[in-house]
Every structure is written in structure tokens, then in C-alpha cells.
Image (cartoon, rainbow, N blue to C red):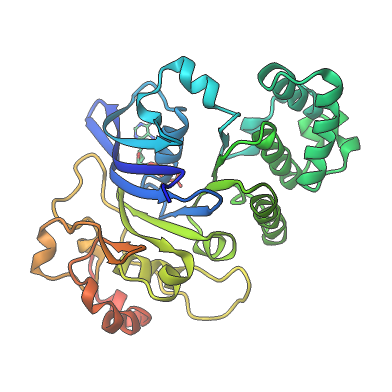
Length: 337
Ligand SMILES: Nc1ncnc2c1ncn2[C@@H]1O[C@H](COP(=O)(O)OP(=O)(O)OP(=O)(O)O)[C@@H](O)[C@H]1O
């Protein structure tokens, strides 16, 4: 079955005085209809840039020099402003990084929902009022709170309201940028539960941009791991997290506590991602990788190890032997990045 969204060789650059920052530099992945896909990686690896490029919400300095992102048969990269406007909210919606950005502070929350439903969705005021109450119910908010101002909401409630706003016109795909990052663990789990329930009830697909592997493990069906502007691994969440193929994914797994259980030694990946102004040639992770070999001076392609599990590493066939070594702190401590 064709994917709902197919991203191919997508590049997003920022023009700066020092030259182009290659924030996304050849991203490849699919989002199947009805699935939750986690886009994960450390800060600065290009996840938010990728999410925003798909939504067409980019600063003036950003450009898309190459690639495509075909959503329901249409390339998002090539849409006119008018075509994009028709798609936004109805088929494709966005939950920005902080819920405050989604909500207008000088308008009651319910009025904002009504506006989307009547002006963009063409609903009558009566139908929109009923739908707004139903949407609040769907995301676990009391419909009486529709009369509140955004500042009267807690962080978790604001996040729920911005999800309700994104869902108002029943899109096929919702892109959420770090939807639970600013919230405490209990509220994080509540919001992720709401998202999973919406997926199950509405058949909605989501891209969840996050730096947190625990969030991916808890909420996602699939995962796309990004490093320095590139996709280094992708596949079903169980396959990728239980048997990672790329050393970066192995390292990420060690570096994060689990959302469900504490314990287990956390092993940091030494060093930090390279500057995307002049990214290194070859494998971008090589400088921090305990398993780097001479061949890593060449760029490893993203290849399918099984039909649905891709990785970009020259040593992918040795992953089974490398995994136990990657679980040991000493392995990572030996790298001088
Ligand atoms: N407006 C901009 N102009 C120039 N460079 C930018 C701009 N926005 C982001 N970048 C750079 O692009 C790269 C990718 O940033 P991006 O925010 O997409 O990463 P991220 O993985 O989402 O990180 P974070 O979680 O910290 O937001 C970084 O090197 C960042 O410094």
C-alpha cells in the first residue's frame, strides 16, 4: 500500500552570513496511513526543521533545494500558497513546539476553535459549537473550559487544546513538534495516551518530533532516527528499539531513561553533533562512533536490512555483535570526539 507521506532526498537549508546551514540534507522516510511515526534525534539534528518544512512554516532564510514530500499524491514541496492553504487543517495539521504558539492569548480558547470550524471548515455556528464541545471531550477537556482564556489553562491543558485545534477538521496527518517536552512525566503520559487514542479512534497518522527515545517507545509505531541532517535508521518501533542497527541508535537507547521504569545505567554519547554549516564528509557520526573504521570516510547509503528496517552504516551486517558492546559505558568513553 502506498504510504500517506513519502519523503525522498529532502534537503532544507538556511542561508546565513557564513554560508548555507544544511539542517536537513537528504531525508528519506515514509509515514503509513494511520501510524504514529517518531522523528527522533539530539538537539540540532534537523527534526524541527524537517517538521516545519513539511508544514510549509519556515523562516524566510530557509529553502528546499532538493527532494520531495508526497502526501496523498501531492508533493508538499511544490505546492502553491493557495494549494497549501486548502490542505492545511483539512488534511494536514500542525501542533507547534509550545502550545502557547498555537493559541492566541487574546482570544478565548473556544472562540479559536469556533473560528477554525466555521471559517475554514464551513460549519454553521450551531454545528461548530457542538463539534467544539465534542473535540474538547476527545482530548480530555471539560467543554465548560471552552470559555476560558489560554492563560487560565495549565501547560498540559494548553497542549490538549492545541491538539483539539489541530484535529478540528479531521486531518489525515498531524505533525506535532515536541508535544510533551515541557510537561512533567505524568502529564506527558496523559497527552501521549490522548494521541494514541485519537489515532485508534480516528485513524489519524502523526509525526511526533521528539528528542526523547522514551516518548517514541511509549507512543510510536515507527521511528525515524536523524543525525546531523540525515536519516540514519528507520523502521517499526519494536525492531528499531529492540535490535538497533545503527551505532547512533544504539547510543541513543543507552542515553535515555525509560518512561515506564527507572533504573539501567545511562551512558552518554560523548561529544556533540557536527556543525551543519560544513558537515564532515563520509558518515557524519564517525567522529563519535566507537565502531568507526576506515570505510566510514565514505558516505554510507540508507539501505534496507529487512524490507521494513533501514539503516545507513557500513557495519550494519555486524549489528548483532556490536549491540552488546554499545551497551557498555567503556565502549563510548574510549571515543575522543
Ligand atoms: N533560522 C535558522 N537559521 C540558521 N540555522 C538554523 C535556523 N534554525 C535552525 N538552524 C540550524 O539548523 C540545524 C537544525 O536545527 P533544528 O532546530 O531543526 O534541529 P532539532 O533537531 O529540531 O533541534 P531542537 O530539538 O534543538 O530544536 C541546527 O544546526 C540549527 O542551528
